[in-house]
Amino acid sequence: MKPETILQQLSNLYSPPKSFLRWKTSLDLTVATILSAQCTDERVNMVTKELFKKCRTAQDYCDLSQREFEKLIRPCGTFRVKSKHIKKLCKILINEYKGKVPRTMEELIELPGVGRKTAAIILYAGFGKLEGIAVDTHVMRLSQRMGLSTHSTPEKIEKDLMKIIPKKDWGRFNTLMISHGRAVCTARDRKCHKCVFKGECPGVLRKS
Image 1: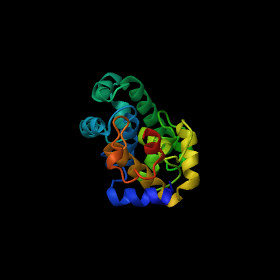
Image 2 (image 1 turned 90 degrees about the horizontal axis):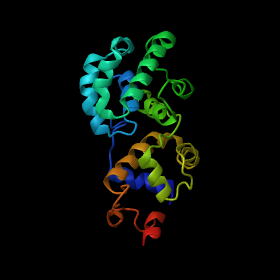
Image 3 (image 1 turned 90 degrees about the vertical axis):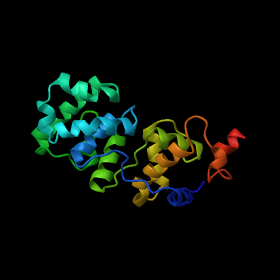
């Protein structure tokens, strides 16, 4: 399947936002993206609706007790690990970046709880910068089914995608693939009969 065909067809079907998470500041986005690991965006948005009322700055997160913070983000799962990461991250932001979220991939991936996927989302949605392709479970699954990558790790799949997807489309490629992964090309019970790619997708051919 040709990447340009995939982008065009999905663009005709979906008009996704830059991020499915709700946020106002780059710090909000960073925290929400960390919380979204192994959790649905819907649940994260429910949690951050209250969390962001209490915490508007990096210092606010540092001032929050560990116990209270864990209670607030508990519904997101792995809340103990996430709370420690976010608190450590906020201390670093205060000490090294004047409380602001850095704007480069190199700086972001050095922060606790931030990998390439999270960093790519922050850069694209928060700052309009394209320094990578965020490969989540949807992007990984669809890339494999569509024959865009034969690899099984996010890092290697991202490298494959960055070679064939025009850089200007890196950000929207992620959100378009997520939209299609949620609506049609689901992890289970995929709706191949409804898919615009049913006549050319390798995933359909393997299934038939």
